[in-house]
Image 1 (cartoon, rainbow, N blue to C red):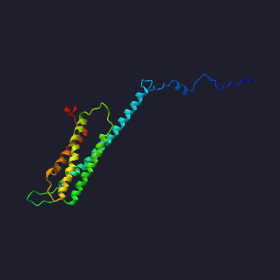
Image 2 (cartoon, one colour; image 1 turned 90 degrees about the vertical axis):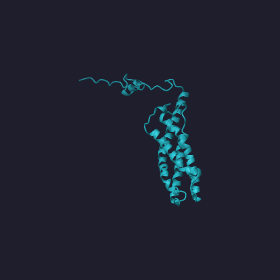
Image 3 (spheres, helix red, strand yellow; image 1 turned 45 degrees about the vertical axis):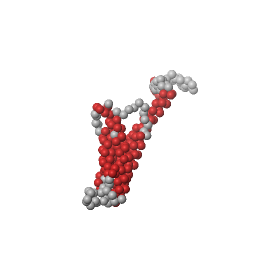
Image 4 (cartoon, rainbow, N blue to C red; image 1 turned 90 degrees about the horizontal axis):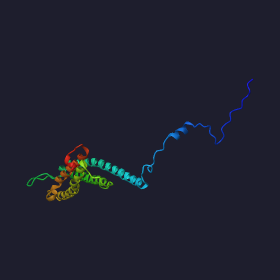
Length: 211
Protein backbone atom coordinates (compact mmCIF):
# COMPACT_ATOMS: atom_id res chain seq x y z
CA UNK A 1 0.00 0.00 0.00
CA UNK A 2 1.17 3.52 -0.79
CA UNK A 3 1.84 5.71 2.18
CA UNK A 4 -0.41 8.72 2.59
CA UNK A 5 1.53 11.88 1.72
CA UNK A 6 0.82 15.16 3.54
CA UNK A 7 -0.97 17.93 1.62
CA UNK A 8 1.11 20.79 0.18
CA UNK A 9 1.17 23.78 2.52
CA UNK A 10 -1.16 26.63 1.50
CA UNK A 11 0.34 30.15 1.12
CA UNK A 12 -0.45 32.36 4.08
CA UNK A 13 -1.52 36.02 4.05
CA UNK A 14 1.26 38.35 2.95
CA UNK A 15 3.16 35.53 1.19
CA UNK A 16 3.40 35.04 -2.58
CA UNK A 17 3.86 31.88 -4.56
CA UNK A 18 6.32 33.67 -6.83
CA UNK A 19 3.89 33.85 -9.74
CA UNK A 20 1.86 36.92 -10.79
CA UNK A 21 -1.60 36.84 -12.26
CA UNK A 22 -2.02 37.97 -15.91
CA UNK A 23 -3.77 41.19 -14.81
CA UNK A 24 -0.85 42.05 -12.51
CA UNK A 25 1.61 41.46 -15.36
CA UNK A 26 -0.36 43.77 -17.66
CA UNK A 27 -0.43 46.49 -15.03
CA UNK A 28 3.31 46.24 -14.60
CA UNK A 29 3.97 46.31 -18.36
CA UNK A 30 1.53 49.13 -19.30
CA UNK A 31 3.39 52.47 -19.23
CA UNK A 32 1.71 55.44 -17.63
CA UNK A 33 0.74 58.28 -20.02
CA UNK A 34 2.90 61.36 -19.46
CA UNK A 35 1.20 64.25 -17.72
CA UNK A 36 1.26 67.85 -18.96
CA UNK A 37 3.86 68.54 -16.29
CA UNK A 38 6.06 65.78 -17.72
CA UNK A 39 5.82 67.45 -21.13
CA UNK A 40 7.07 70.74 -19.75
CA UNK A 41 3.78 72.65 -19.46
CA UNK A 42 3.39 74.78 -16.38
CA UNK A 43 0.00 75.06 -14.63
CA UNK A 44 -0.28 78.67 -15.88
CA UNK A 45 0.22 77.56 -19.48
CA UNK A 46 -2.32 74.79 -19.12
CA UNK A 47 -4.93 77.21 -17.74
CA UNK A 48 -4.22 79.70 -20.54
CA UNK A 49 -4.71 77.03 -23.21
CA UNK A 50 -8.01 76.00 -21.64
CA UNK A 51 -9.24 79.60 -21.75
CA UNK A 52 -8.16 79.96 -25.39
CA UNK A 53 -9.94 76.75 -26.34
CA UNK A 54 -13.09 77.97 -24.62
CA UNK A 55 -12.91 81.24 -26.59
CA UNK A 56 -12.41 79.31 -29.83
CA UNK A 57 -15.39 77.07 -29.08
CA UNK A 58 -17.63 80.04 -28.29
CA UNK A 59 -16.49 81.92 -31.38
CA UNK A 60 -17.11 78.88 -33.60
CA UNK A 61 -20.60 78.42 -32.17
CA UNK A 62 -21.57 82.08 -32.58
CA UNK A 63 -20.27 82.25 -36.15
CA UNK A 64 -22.21 79.11 -37.07
CA UNK A 65 -25.38 80.72 -35.72
CA UNK A 66 -24.46 83.89 -37.65
CA UNK A 67 -24.11 81.89 -40.86
CA UNK A 68 -27.40 80.05 -40.39
CA UNK A 69 -29.38 83.18 -39.55
CA UNK A 70 -27.73 85.00 -42.46
CA UNK A 71 -29.07 82.45 -44.92
CA UNK A 72 -32.54 82.55 -43.35
CA UNK A 73 -32.58 86.37 -43.44
CA UNK A 74 -32.08 86.28 -47.20
CA UNK A 75 -35.59 84.81 -47.61
CA UNK A 76 -37.66 87.73 -46.24
CA UNK A 77 -35.18 90.15 -47.82
CA UNK A 78 -35.90 88.78 -51.30
CA UNK A 79 -39.63 88.71 -50.55
CA UNK A 80 -39.47 92.37 -49.52
CA UNK A 81 -37.86 93.28 -52.84
CA UNK A 82 -40.50 91.34 -54.76
CA UNK A 83 -43.39 93.03 -52.96
CA UNK A 84 -41.81 96.49 -53.27
CA UNK A 85 -43.40 97.41 -56.64
CA UNK A 86 -46.83 96.37 -55.32
CA UNK A 87 -46.48 98.86 -52.47
CA UNK A 88 -45.57 101.74 -54.76
CA UNK A 89 -47.96 104.22 -56.36
CA UNK A 90 -48.09 103.87 -60.15
CA UNK A 91 -48.48 106.65 -62.66
CA UNK A 92 -46.65 109.71 -63.87
CA UNK A 93 -47.33 113.39 -63.52
CA UNK A 94 -50.43 114.33 -65.48
CA UNK A 95 -51.78 110.79 -65.29
CA UNK A 96 -54.09 109.10 -62.86
CA UNK A 97 -51.96 107.73 -60.05
CA UNK A 98 -52.94 104.32 -58.75
CA UNK A 99 -52.28 104.01 -55.04
CA UNK A 100 -51.22 100.65 -53.57
CA UNK A 101 -53.82 98.72 -51.64
CA UNK A 102 -53.52 98.83 -47.85
CA UNK A 103 -53.00 95.05 -47.80
CA UNK A 104 -50.03 95.22 -50.21
CA UNK A 105 -48.54 98.15 -48.35
CA UNK A 106 -48.90 96.52 -44.91
CA UNK A 107 -47.51 93.21 -46.17
CA UNK A 108 -44.46 94.94 -47.64
CA UNK A 109 -43.88 96.86 -44.41
CA UNK A 110 -44.20 93.68 -42.35
CA UNK A 111 -41.63 91.90 -44.51
CA UNK A 112 -39.31 94.88 -44.27
CA UNK A 113 -39.59 94.93 -40.49
CA UNK A 114 -38.95 91.18 -40.29
CA UNK A 115 -35.90 91.51 -42.54
CA UNK A 116 -34.48 94.36 -40.47
CA UNK A 117 -34.97 92.51 -37.19
CA UNK A 118 -33.40 89.30 -38.47
CA UNK A 119 -30.52 91.19 -40.08
CA UNK A 120 -29.44 92.86 -36.86
CA UNK A 121 -29.89 89.64 -34.91
CA UNK A 122 -27.59 87.97 -37.42
CA UNK A 123 -25.09 90.80 -37.11
CA UNK A 124 -25.10 90.47 -33.30
CA UNK A 125 -23.57 86.99 -33.45
CA UNK A 126 -20.73 88.21 -35.65
CA UNK A 127 -20.05 91.46 -33.80
CA UNK A 128 -19.99 89.93 -30.31
CA UNK A 129 -18.23 86.67 -31.17
CA UNK A 130 -14.97 86.47 -29.14
CA UNK A 131 -12.01 87.87 -31.06
CA UNK A 132 -8.76 85.92 -31.34
CA UNK A 133 -5.65 88.08 -31.08
CA UNK A 134 -3.38 88.04 -34.11
CA UNK A 135 -5.95 86.53 -36.47
CA UNK A 136 -6.72 88.68 -39.52
CA UNK A 137 -9.40 87.94 -42.14
CA UNK A 138 -8.08 86.86 -45.52
CA UNK A 139 -9.47 85.84 -48.88
CA UNK A 140 -13.22 85.33 -49.06
CA UNK A 141 -13.63 86.18 -45.37
CA UNK A 142 -11.98 89.54 -45.99
CA UNK A 143 -14.38 90.31 -48.85
CA UNK A 144 -17.29 89.16 -46.68
CA UNK A 145 -16.20 91.61 -43.97
CA UNK A 146 -15.62 94.47 -46.43
CA UNK A 147 -19.14 94.12 -47.84
CA UNK A 148 -20.49 94.82 -44.36
CA UNK A 149 -19.63 98.48 -45.01
CA UNK A 150 -22.19 98.44 -47.83
CA UNK A 151 -25.14 96.39 -46.61
CA UNK A 152 -24.73 97.52 -42.98
CA UNK A 153 -25.41 101.22 -43.64
CA UNK A 154 -27.92 100.12 -46.27
CA UNK A 155 -29.98 98.34 -43.61
CA UNK A 156 -30.15 101.62 -41.72
CA UNK A 157 -30.86 103.94 -44.65
CA UNK A 158 -33.37 101.72 -46.45
CA UNK A 159 -35.90 101.47 -43.57
CA UNK A 160 -35.62 105.21 -42.88
CA UNK A 161 -36.35 106.02 -46.51
CA UNK A 162 -39.18 103.49 -46.43
CA UNK A 163 -40.77 105.22 -43.45
CA UNK A 164 -40.53 108.58 -45.25
CA UNK A 165 -42.10 107.06 -48.38
CA UNK A 166 -44.88 105.50 -46.30
CA UNK A 167 -45.74 108.87 -44.74
CA UNK A 168 -45.88 110.51 -48.16
CA UNK A 169 -48.12 107.71 -49.46
CA UNK A 170 -50.50 108.12 -46.53
CA UNK A 171 -50.64 111.86 -47.13
CA UNK A 172 -51.80 111.17 -50.69
CA UNK A 173 -48.56 112.44 -52.17
CA UNK A 174 -46.40 110.89 -54.82
CA UNK A 175 -43.16 109.73 -53.25
CA UNK A 176 -40.52 112.39 -53.79
CA UNK A 177 -37.19 113.65 -52.50
CA UNK A 178 -34.85 111.25 -50.73
CA UNK A 179 -37.75 108.89 -50.08
CA UNK A 180 -37.88 108.16 -53.81
CA UNK A 181 -34.51 106.38 -53.47
CA UNK A 182 -35.96 103.81 -51.08
CA UNK A 183 -36.16 101.15 -53.79
CA UNK A 184 -32.66 101.88 -55.09
CA UNK A 185 -31.19 101.65 -51.59
CA UNK A 186 -32.99 98.36 -51.03
CA UNK A 187 -31.61 96.85 -54.26
CA UNK A 188 -28.03 97.94 -53.51
CA UNK A 189 -28.29 96.62 -49.95
CA UNK A 190 -29.68 93.27 -51.06
CA UNK A 191 -27.02 92.93 -53.79
CA UNK A 192 -24.20 93.58 -51.30
CA UNK A 193 -25.77 91.18 -48.82
CA UNK A 194 -26.10 88.47 -51.47
CA UNK A 195 -22.48 88.99 -52.55
CA UNK A 196 -21.37 88.62 -48.93
CA UNK A 197 -23.17 85.28 -48.70
CA UNK A 198 -21.72 84.06 -52.00
CA UNK A 199 -18.20 85.09 -50.95
CA UNK A 200 -18.14 82.57 -48.10
CA UNK A 201 -20.40 79.94 -49.65
CA UNK A 202 -18.77 79.30 -53.02
CA UNK A 203 -15.13 78.34 -53.65
CA UNK A 204 -14.22 81.67 -55.25
CA UNK A 205 -10.52 82.48 -55.17
CA UNK A 206 -9.20 85.75 -56.54
CA UNK A 207 -5.62 86.75 -55.82
CA UNK A 208 -6.38 90.39 -55.05
CA UNK A 209 -8.41 89.22 -52.03
CA UNK A 210 -5.20 87.96 -50.45
CA UNK A 211 -3.46 91.36 -50.68
